[in-house]
Length: 260
Image (tube, rainbow, N blue to C red; front, side, top):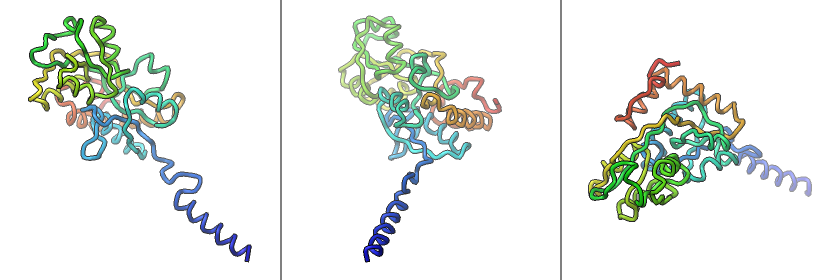
């Protein structure tokens, strides 16, 4: 009887483990992607689905490489450390590759370049970086916008936010005088908030490349992303995704269809 009961318990336990994937998760081959929910056009959520240029490009890359992805929202200021400690396999959110960030994570090959936009409201005396002194300027903490403001307008009063949405809300209510966003994000906010009378007063183009972040030393995953990236550039998918999310931005020569 004891043996029979033990067998029943053992069988039940094995059934539970099988249903849960046992010692290995059923989604163990699924890559967790840390991304943002509010940073148009690069990374955002729409009708419960993570989308944007970066995320749709990553989906296309994954399809070429037979990779499964699970997107999870986080704050940009925490993203790279979360990739570094293994919480996420990939970071996807228009991440500019800087020397400082390369100390924390490795990056894929470049898939775009950083462009910024200074945004303000009508009636505020801001026209470019030279007019930011003494003004309260919003940036998302830890971004290139943050470091750009410190380097190019040190007399500005930097107001740091955890995400774009918080900076936009502060700009609309007058809590800050202006903000520095990604250029396409600034253009989108201007177009979609006519009542707030927002305007982008200057675009700043940089040569800083964007890359998908992976844990340092994960050359296998970086290699798969890079191989997939080459494929989506060559077959024209990169340009299609770019046209969908950033139609007004120029296409760098190395991302045009047919490039290897």
